[in-house]
Amino acid sequence: MHYPEVYIGKITPYAGHSPSAIEKRAVNGELMLTSLGFEGDEQAETRHHGGPDRALCHYPREHYEYWRHQFPEQADQFIAPLFGENISTTGLTEHDAYIGDIYRWGKTLIQITQPRSPCYKLNFHCDIDDFARTMQNNGRCGWLYRVIVAGNIHTKQPLELVSRNSDVSVAEAISIAFNAPFDEEQYRRLLAAAGLSASWSKNMQMRLLTKSIEDFERRLVG
Image (cartoon, rainbow, N blue to C red; front, side, top):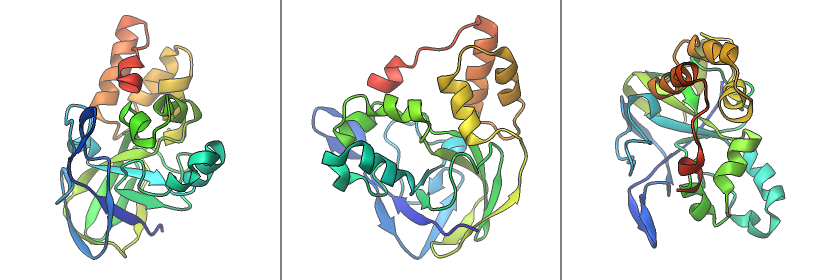
């Protein structure tokens, strides 16, 4: 079992940039979890954030120690929820979490659908050039959930793994999608992972059809 810290946020303006809800705050007590995430939590660009397959974002808290070592002059900023996550835990990383995993959380069930795809907003939010690419390259991306059963959760309730439905870890999915050469066999393996999000299924299918990997630059640099 894993005991999460929980965060939600509102859309706010960013000087020189489009509005974002990446700025989250810690919440405690009972919360309503709907098919689109926590009541009171918002996403600014719904084409790329939020929706049923991306209702919640989970980021491992232990990764922040790595980032503090990588960027010592900005170490003070590397505390949850810097990356806009809704859930932060210790003891559960991309190597232990698998595409399709289903967790019981209070009265709800949530399922891992895909790794987080780092985007350019991390660059200015962290004030580090090309930070999104750095996160993508080293695989410390976190992951996203869909809500299978909506309901109330209490922030003191644990996440309990109740069903493992694929053999593709989130770490493997990141490697296959972002950091490995073109490989049809691996794309088919990822496509076969139960619970994979519609957007990632589309991307893998398009790679098979076009025999090429999509361009990441717009997502990474804006």
